[in-house]
Length: 386
Image (cartoon, rainbow, N blue to C red; front, side, top):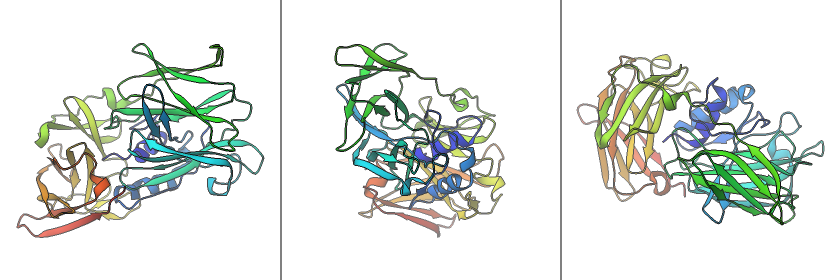
């Protein structure tokens, strides 16, 4: 699975957004993340090493609107304003809601910096067990309403929902997202006890584009309108380098250069997962043929798993001939691996389906790699994350 945290960080680290949600300017530059799953080690390192490049980290929150319900997530601190998020004084209670893109809790609150400014903070949990928390580095004092970001990402969330969220003063009684395709989606406003402002959220279908956010007063008058710029996603329109490969479960995978090398997995023409190959990601630059894949923190890894509903897929070491998912009750499904036809080197691909759940990490599982002779080469245990 392409973790949303990974998506957001990568978008800000690269000169072109890879698979990140859109966030407004002015977010903090320090990110904290943790995870019990291997792929999140990369996220943590991205956060730790490339903080200077993160000009606009991401945000998370939830929506309980009249049209839809959802929530989202974020990551950052406040370098420009002083102390990191964990030293910033909270104001009032926190708002915890379900993230519609992740189906995990997301928490939002306001905090006061050492300089006395009020900032918007959030804490996010991913499906895989990773997490992060941060505060915006742009104060919301004096702002009638602000756009703090969304959970938009590439690939789109498997849940088909994207959360938009931000802040609003008491005079705002209605918020709506204006869609490029036509129409509006009404959101909701909630004010945690003791909070200086309300928190607004709007959940929209992932395949819709929000062009503006409108905030209205009690008499229906428009208080503020915020125009949203479309997210630039080179991968969305990129053409594959060479042939694409048809994999089990009706998945197609191809090599794309945007300019980074990525494997993009598609189902019925829609991207559902990405494995990064360069720079400093997987394969040849980090290990090479017949050597272990190397994570961004320099640690060896045996597998990089992605998942989308009943589909599970990814890359593994060159010596792995078969990969299996073993569930808590002992039942399992497996998939044979296939070589890299683009001659990048250093990995084999696998893909399969399972009918047990649309949220692998919720109930937990073990993933196991076997050699040609059936001998177990490696395994990873994933405890339930919900």
